[in-house]
Length: 228
Image (cartoon, rainbow, N blue to C red; front, side, top):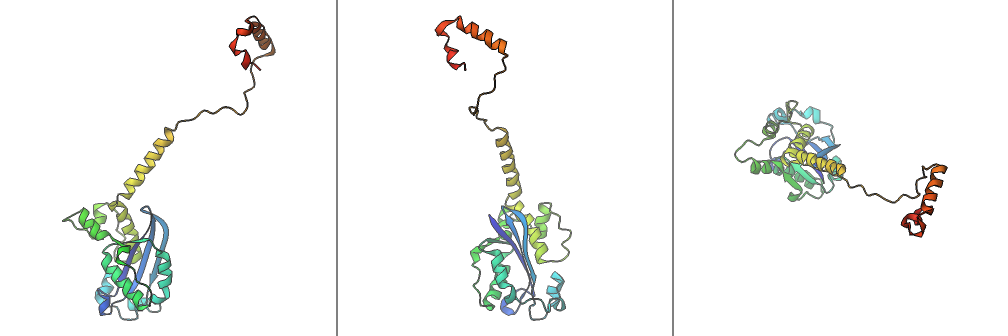
């Protein structure tokens, strides 16, 4: 099962008030295991960067100036995600921004059911507990020490590990591997007839003596028919 672990960074909280995407990252996983394929791009938001947003992700307007516009990378982004499910922590937020940018670019928007929200799932699985990405890393003993600021690619890679733990993916992979090993060890080996009989190991003298013995038994020796 191919899925894309997705994250974005933005200039703020609401595209309806003029906030824009500034970074998109997607990590491909197959059966919860990252394949090494990913999509990552910084985007020129064509506006300033509020201080609050800058403190979150550290992307300045100066750094982003001259980076591709969303409309320039939209086709590559859509080609990368294909028709795979999108796995997002707090999916409503990211989907809202992605669809606002797609709409602005005159491209088809992503339906809400394309996204699997790991935040909602974690809240159902761990009711009453903290379920931020950092909290889930602590719960599942995932090293996120490199995450000093939010970054779409880094957060996608970390979320891929969290997602595998949330869904029991690692345990399932180990179980399948164990079952395969057991099946391999307990295979029934079917004996098949040899394409050609093995060469006799009797010496000429032994064969002659055996023939003499059979001659003394007459025609009632049932194994005579098998002697070549």
